[in-house]
Amino acid sequence: MDCEQLAPLYEEYALGVLEGEERAEMEAHLARHCPHCIPGIEKARWVVAQLAHASPEAQPPASLKGKILDAAQSSGKLSEFAKAAPSSRAVFPVWALAAAAALALLTGYSIRQMGNQSAQLASLRQQMKIAMLQNKALQDQLEVSRQIAYVMTSPDSMTLKLMPKDKNMPMVHAYLHPHMGVAITAEQMPSMPAARTLQLWFLSKAGKPMSIAIFHPDPQGQIAVIAPVNMPRNEIAALAVTEEPAGGSPQPTSNPAWMAQVN
Image (tube, rainbow, N blue to C red; front, side):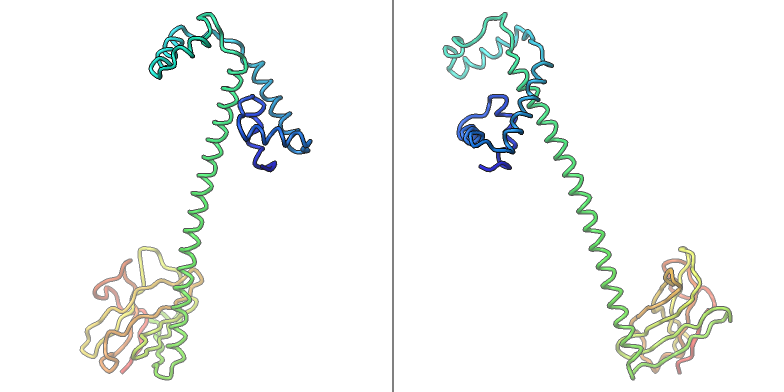
């Protein structure tokens, strides 16, 4: 055994309760004048000595002896135990109280360490979960950006400019692809309250609006959205964006704030 393996046994050796191969290993190690273990043992002995001074002899209750004798009798070892048992006026030796105190200290320390490690592990798991969610969100955003770039640059896409009803609002750009969907982009958009959202509609030639997507500008005022085309392009008369309650509406509840003619 090396110094690191022996270090947890210093207190047991100092208390005199270390036995068997571990005690032999410790004594052989100390015989080699180990510069690490010898100071460790000395420190452990000092701690034990302080515990001994702090633990006066105590008179055990009379009922304790009876319980011990009953337990020994039930195991068939009463005769051996009776020979070694002290009289009713005997007291616990100091070293036994010191050993118990040392064991209590070590147990308390171990429990605290386990509690700290459990808290650290829980915190680490929470951080890993957050990091995984952030990574998933980033991957999803990258995939959306890739699809938008493909639709914007495809020669099969129709480019549309959704003009704002309010001239102080920025223009919204749309790129309509027959298979990949419709990409919506805009910049310098004003922020919106959480209770409101923007909703994109296809207006059919029959005049019936069909909801395509709901979206919000990001904190930088940018919009980058892609949505499927669920209406044949030759039936789409216009694209429109309205402001709706959070979650969107089955039918527009306000006049279009942006609009572009398709056919």
